[in-house]
Length: 404
Image 1 (cartoon, rainbow, N blue to C red):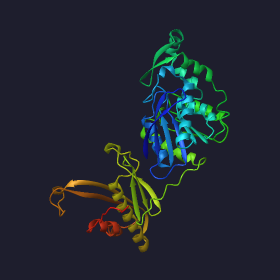
Image 2: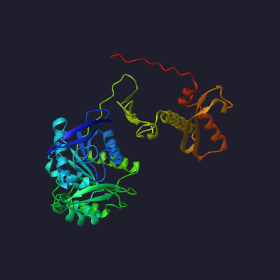
Image 3: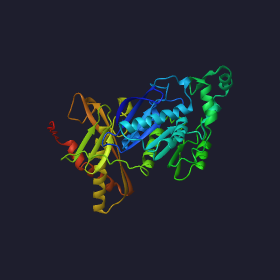
Image 4: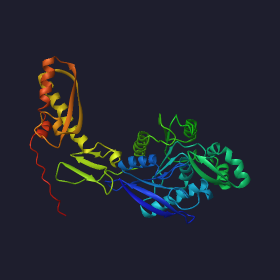
């Protein structure tokens, strides 16, 4: 994924901050705008994870900070729900002028209500996604009860939501009072995907059902079991991103990643900054990465895990071939592997006596009607798998720079 920092102007002349997440491989034919929640910004981890999942599936994601939030200019106290909607329309115009008009609108929480309100003003939109969204923007008033009277009296008040403090003024409440439903859901006119957790303590699952009941077909609803309102667990936000990517492929033409041309069987490509790496092996493509603790995105196995995986796959296939040839009753073969580096002096039977050595622990689990002699024979055959032999033989890696 390639992340581009962008500044653009809204219709009020305020400079807003955005990031455009582009697929690493292939020019996207689908663009999405992501509207964040009331207490979030464009860089909130869940939004980033969902954007990454979409970018890995060929969708470019334009995520931006609303006026007065995050890195965007302006005073949040002077904004309201409708100004968020206007910011969304401004973002769509910027995308259309500089890249491509947006195909997808995605909104989280109040951002979900905003995309429902903005969709009818953006003709290019083919699909809409809401995540943990209220069925009506005025739901937010239930979290502002103590401040509402003060706002009506003093024109403004300080409120705290999800641990963040905000100043709100009369305009904000007037927007929530006036927007209502206005049949924006019933007349959406686009396919709608609703993602919501039944465990959401901020916006109850009833809101998802109300949106679903009001929306015309095609409409879909997915329960994010166990997730909280902010999708704070990484696995929840990554799952949501993968679900959205799969769903939108029904309604927009997603690009087929450009072939990483090579006269070799395997070609690997890493982007400008991040460690996420695309691999093409024959006709198969997949991703390698580093864990987050090492600065990666943890979107795929690390290189050593791929080495261990190759040994495990080769071992399992070799044992299956041998068992089939012998006619032995082997139901399944599972190979457990772990790579680690140890000090050479901790290995009594290793030739290397100093420094560190690589050790791959391999445990073979056999299921079937086998006697002990058969089990021991299969253990011996494991060492005959071609990858095992390669790892134990002299390996020469010939490296050169590719000519332009």
